[in-house]
Amino acid sequence: MPMRNSPDLIVVGAGVVGAACAYYAARSGLSVTVIDRGPVAGGTTGAGEGNLLVSDKEPGPELELALVSAQLWRELSDVLPPRIEYETKGGLVVASDDASLKVLRDLAARQERAGVKNQQVAGDRLRDLEPHLSPDLAGGFHYPQDAQVQPALAAAHLLRAAGGKGSGRVLLRLGEEVTGVLKDAGGEVRGVRTATGEVHAPCVVNAAGTWGGRLAGLAGVDLPVLPRRGFVLVTEPLPRVVRHKVYTADYVADVASGSAALQTSAVVEGTPAGPVLIGASRERVGFDRTLSVEALRRLAAQATRLFPVLSRVRAIRTYAGFRPYLPDHLPAIGPDPRVPGLLHACGHEGAGIGLAPATGLIVARIVSGGELPMDIAPFRPDRFERASPGAPRTP
Image 1 (cartoon, rainbow, N blue to C red):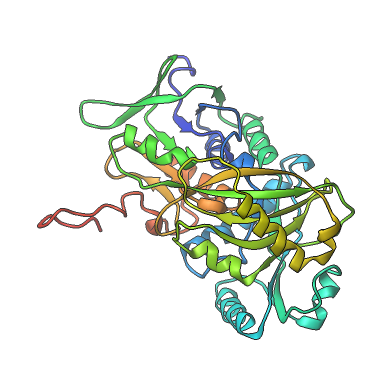
Image 2: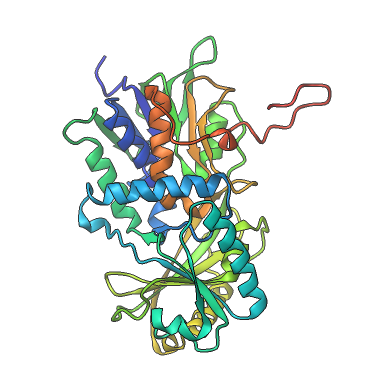
């Protein structure tokens, strides 16, 4: 049958995670169709800051995934065009007092044992790294492995490179919403249905981001992905005022929190184009895009406390996005044992851009039969199931 209707693999979602799945699958020689109800990077990816971080992660499976991805991003930066704005700027995590500094010191020690490079910076030396920082900070830690990309460009160029020489074939079907997951009589995946017809494939990858729970539901399984709203403030273009990604110790706690309430913690970084990006806020309000003046007020106040020079700078716009949140803060990656042929690659919350290459490589190797780069058991998609009384629990 023509490739249009029968690729080896269907990827639902054209954000950076779906793009990475398509890239590595095509590089493995598979034919891939990528389907998205909107444009490339039209969801969470297009509203992201492009963070590629190891500094904000506790030792464990997510950090291991981030370290694999960090290496893959370095390799991709040699393959993809410079326009993706890959920048190994490094991260600087700062503490306002001795108690917060002790928390950072304990975390940094655990991270170092897991393979993360970091170096403590005394309070009176922070301005050697960031001359415009507030002078009254207790100290911090520098993380040279932290980096950044322009996320929408990264997704677009991954998809373009996926169909390059030496790859399998890649077809994009944008502006098509998946309305059903096709199965055979035995319950195995046989493709998807869209408004324009059916696409047949033995494997379907759920890379639908914040809509990952809905797509899982179309396949008849539960995956409790929820949207977590966040805002970013964008300043007017400036000379390089902020050299690193700079954030406070509070940000680490907010990332790990499961609270639905509004949380804000200063995250400030410059961009090659000039504007400074200011985040980060988190709250669970469904898909409500209403502008939160309170969130923006907090972000501006926290950023100017970190960098007093920003108090004289205009914010020219703001944008909102939704992070795909799962209750244990780990993504769902890999085959779903409940539906043969269904794989998941979603629920990365705010770390999806950083974790995309490792996720895509894992998915591609599962489908092509290659060796996995790490143990993926902690990311099992069915781990949230609760067995009924008397029934065996999912291992």
